[in-house]
Amino acid sequence: MWKHGKTKKGKARWYCKNCRSSGIKKRKDVSLRRWIKIIKKRFIEGLKLKKIAKEEGLHLRYIQNKCAEVLKKITLKFRRIILDPTKPLILDGTWIVFRKSMVLVAHDTEKVLSWKFVTTENYDSWFSFLSDLEGRPSGIVSDAQKGLLLAVFARFGNIPHQRCVAHVIRQSKIWLTRNPKTKAGIELLVIVKELAKVKTAEESEKWKEDYDMWLKKHHDFLKERSHLENSKRWWYTHRRLRGIRSLLSNALPNLFVYISHNIPNTTNHVEGGINSPLKFCFKEHRGLSFENKKALVHLFLNERSKRKNQH
Image 1 (cartoon, rainbow, N blue to C red):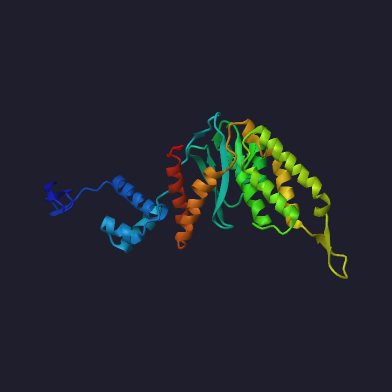
Image 2: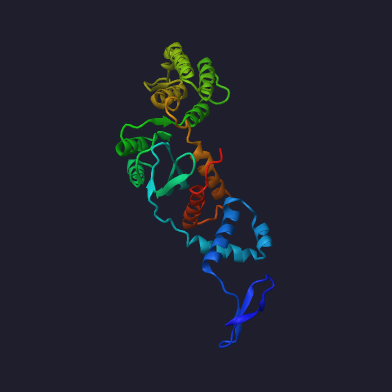
């Protein structure tokens, strides 16, 4: 083959004297990188298909078909992960397809370390996931899912474990609503909001005192019962307040671990930086197949595993 001029885009054209045809040399790796960039623009960055077609000079239907073809080729390659003993491990899981598949993610505040697809979030799935990680982190931050707690203890033993404060505050506010109707609810909402402002050991002790005072003040109120007329059936009148009480009391032993240990107090590195963008992507592209969703997760998290925290 010898050179036979150039294409309109400036690429060298080659001519074959045997088959009397001309064309350009294509590298599969370069072509794959190009299409991965296009997929990122379309699914992760949220660019409209028409805009991408105009930028790339390609037909809409061709882009759709090629994206689907390339997504099938994206798979997770096993990587040996060794944990940094000076950094905490932030753990969280999010549904990819509800009740069918979810992804467990491990983050170290700078980048994604590892991830794994599972059918449900329980002890077995978390222990299997953590067993693939070598070493021991400085601490754990999580939403305290029961299976996760047991798996962390089985894998790392007695390690500092911070309960995600953001999860506790968010769930408490959902149950309380913005405008509680009872005096106990109004007072508890103030206490819950103060939780986000705690930064020192003194402030944590003050918060505990305020919470204990609330418990004592409304102890009898929380025990009030409602009865069904002409029946022996009854239920606690203030079930949501009782639920928040249980939530806060159960979280309390691990609520302020971050003050005495150098670890974050929320899982927002995973929840806000990873889970939210993925959910938005799947919401915008509802027609994606399950396998294509998994491929996008691999692509997205692989990028996050390279990106360093800019803070």
